[in-house]
Structure formats: C-alpha cells, structure tokens
Image (tube, rainbow, N blue to C red; front, side, top):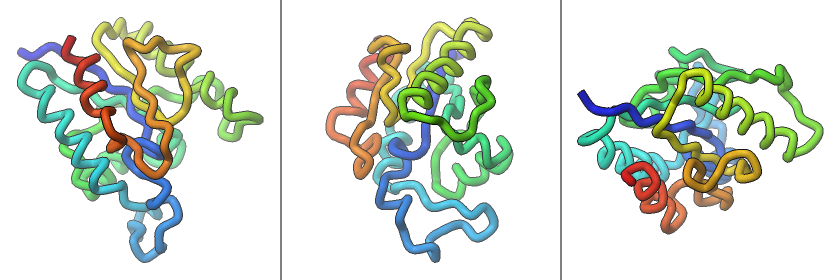
Length: 169
C-alpha cells in the first residue's frame, strides 16, 4: 500500500484564476452556481497527482472557503465537472467560526490555523498546503506553496516542480 500524502488545497487563486471569477455567468454550473476552474490549472494539478500516485496515495483536504457553501459530496461533483482527477477526502473546517474577516491577515491566520490543527489532530506527517494567501508566517516553506498571481494560479511557472520537490523529497 502506498504512503499517504496530504494536499491542503485552496480553490480560488490556485485552480480557479481571476479569469474565472469574473467570467460570463453562462459558463457557471447552473445547479451549484459556481464557475469552472481554469483548465490549464486543472491540467497542472492532475499532472502533480499523476506524479504522486505511483508512490503515494494523495489525500485532498479542502482548505478553501468553498467548504462554507458546498458539502463534500457537492464539492466532489464540482471537481468531477471540472475534470479534476481526484476526490476531496475532507475539509479542514472553519474553527474560528468567521465567514467574513476584518483583514486579509486575519483570513490567512485562520486558514493556517485550521490546516495546522488538522495536521496535529490527525498526526499528518507528509503534507503540503497550496494557497494564494500568504500562510508563510504560520506554515514553513517545507509545507507551503503560494500561488500569488490571481490570473495564473498553480500554472505559474515553477510551481509544479516546487510542489513535487517538496512532496517527493
């Protein structure tokens, strides 16, 4: 059996770029009222999964605030609709119980707190968080990749190689 590797995944700014946030509503999923992910970002993410699956069992934990709007079952249907080659296993949860934050830093700290709490609670050893928010004050560089360019997400040059380097070493 393959070793487990956990990927704490954000959606906006990682799989969905700013091009999707402001897209024509006709491209939205009618039932779930959500937009499509960036196809090139999905291709990069699927390629990462393909590289991992030979050695590891990738476990996807959604750390995105999309978890506030959709159940695990619906999120997995959204992943399928977007042709993501995996399912989400779990959500980090929102332990602070806040939906709207006073500052971006507050949101970043809460997101990092939720990820770290999950890691500690489930004694996760091999993991990475991928997010467009800056979680680096709370999560070290051996467990965090930032995708800061809203129009590029995970397809930003060098991100795939950096993610694989962290996960495979």
